[in-house]
Image 1 (cartoon, rainbow, N blue to C red):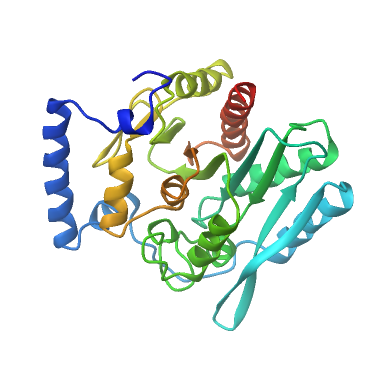
Image 2 (cartoon, one colour):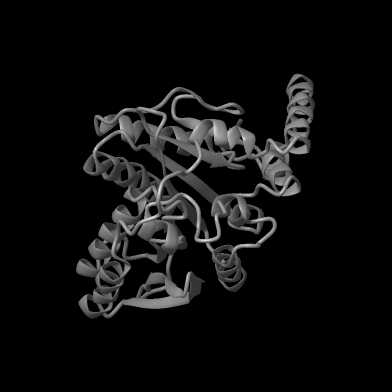
Length: 312
């Protein structure tokens, strides 16, 4: 697919692919009808069992976030709202870095929507600290950073929120308060780029979801930078219905719309459908050490930001 094709052209499929699409739709409808839209998920990720216990300190994270505003006059911190479970309340914090001159683009970075995937949160905190210390670091890009979308899950090391909902399936129904707060943010602000940071416990290399993005050259460049950094890239099956080809899962526009139709829409899919022209979901292998996962995030995000900003 050409780099300069429109989304309409990108979503126009060849007859052979149309047949595969129809077959896939019937498979997914059968899964949904039997209650197995989450069945694929359960077979891949497993159920969360065992006693719920506190594994991380949210007050310490909030102190670290609020310290950014004292480090740089360009950094601000706000709460998008609070979520409450079991008599306790946690704010969903957003770090913003404004730019003095008119910005080339506006970027939203999010992590911790699954509370048992902490590397994205740690990377985003480190990235925000770099922004605060050095005003020349991406000086023409305005950033909003939400390091923890799921505070209860992050505190307790659980994938789901305090009500037992997988937040990355809630952006069609909005039954979870965390999803409502992120939906409201999407309604207030328009972003040129959105990236959601995740981890996968079943792979040994990095991969990402290319969400209705026809720019194949950009995506290949991102993967090349991960490899150039000496980091592994996943090539092969991810889940029953997803296959990463040299680190890239290509999700055409119709698949995002279909996920909304069966009420299994992720946050990054939602932002893409609501008008963000570029949205990605990054996955690092949880089996690697935290520092290695963070290095993967840094390599691919830097490639994405530099290449995208350079074209504006």
